Image (tube, rainbow, N blue to C red; front, side):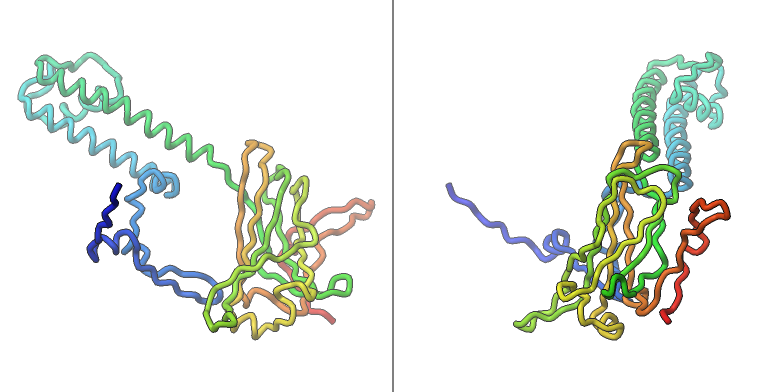
Amino acid sequence: MKFRLKRLSQKQRQRLIPRIHIKIQDGQFEIMGMGVWYSYWRDPYHLLLTIPWTAFLALIAVLYVATNTLFALAYLAGGDCIENARPGYFLDAFFFSVQTLASIGYGAMYPKTTYANTIVTIEAMAGLVGIAVMTGLAFARFSRPTARVLFSHVAVITPHEGVPTLMFRAANERRNQILEAQMRVYLMRDEVTVEGQFMRRFHDLKLLRSQTPSFMLSWSAMHPIDEYSPLYGMTPESLIQTKTTLVISLSGIDETVAQVVHARHHYSANDILWNYRFVDIIHYTDEGHRYIDYNEFHDILPLD
């Protein structure tokens, strides 16, 4: 068996391997010219799941009016083919199309020719498919699990148990629980290998507690900066110089919908403050009961 390699043209290669320009600003990736090499219209299902509800409903309305307009023009092309409709009158044909597409069937207007019955048959099939597709998309948007997790505006490096520790906060904004919650922290920075090759390298940051059986209120994530930490020996200046970014990924099972939810956040080098600590958000009432004050969730204080 012989195989023949086909040489692709320059235009075909550009379609398969698009040119992407990446800009790193303040430690964050920014892809330049995304609309040139990719369009969401190539993936309409993903587009309809990600656009806002207002745009989704507006798009459905536009498609609905456009569909009825096309079928109304088709009925008009058949001449006097609709009983009790004024010949050549667009609104009568349009509203007859609305009744047909939605299977309303008031009975005042009905097809009286073979041509009209053919268009009605086509429109009825289109209506069944369209309603099924729109219902499925709406259900997929409603049933998509989402997490409402609040992260502190900044991360701090402060002593904990005598060891410099990276800390940040997370809070569950819903009044339910995220079961078997897991948090992972990744450090991204520019590095140069021994061979002199530049690369953007990822490092895992080990947390003192990376899992919790129930995430309901708040979570203080802590990473000790010891000799095994990628942050060991770094300074605020070196973080900025290497365009360091922290990426946080939190996942768990939402107890309400019993589905996995995800939340992400990132901190740039300027969001990591040295020699600060978070204000304590746990307080006590006069009766000795504990409560959490989320008004101080983002507040920090300099170390003495």
